Length: 135
Image: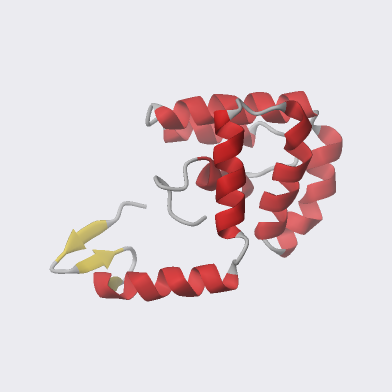
């Protein structure tokens, strides 16, 4: 969905004053207090090129961050994807994101079994938190 900024408002489906964004971010972080820690973990994974032994923790943290649906899919994602498959998907997605290829990154993560686009986008959100809005 494209976002347009006009006369101090960001237009999604309804106009929203840009001045509202700091409070919205504060509210989001209050409702999702693990966000900064998961962002730090993701940055560490990017820097270390996604070591396979770290995949279970990262997948668990992101799925739990995603709420009840994430908790429901977590065991299936871990059971039906190897650590190597997860690391390869995230490594490829991180590379695609670094080149501005967001759709390619989403496709790579969405190939993981039992992960849908909604949760694939959550992984991307953490891999490139400064470029993507909360998913």
